[in-house]
Length: 118
Image 1 (cartoon, rainbow, N blue to C red):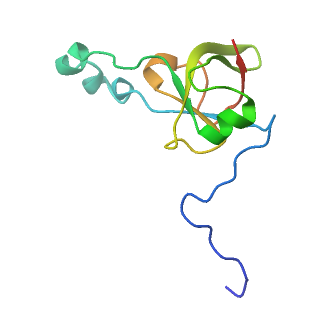
Image 2 (cartoon, rainbow, N blue to C red; image 1 turned 90 degrees about the vertical axis):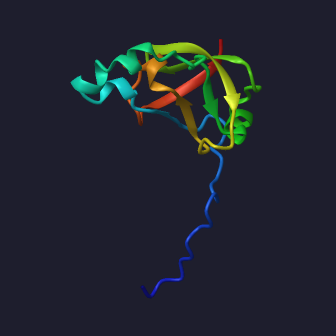
């Protein structure tokens, strides 16, 4: 109240600058929610459709100098992994996204990460 600030339009975000910080985000694995669900037979029979790739916003890919489909190393200090990286406008700029099933326990959600061509 009383300010001149106008809320940003939905989707109005800035891409990180070259060398800017990237943040790791992932889903919570459906089998990690509780003991009952974890042991459900349909879940045990479900296939893993995670291809192991990570996603970044196309503007973040460009700022990092990484081409769509490039194999990259995602790391935070000495911890990290290698994955194929693809662009997606469904991922917020400045974010590296991967499904939890593949990378569960590697990096905590919200961790600042770096990417480099592998």
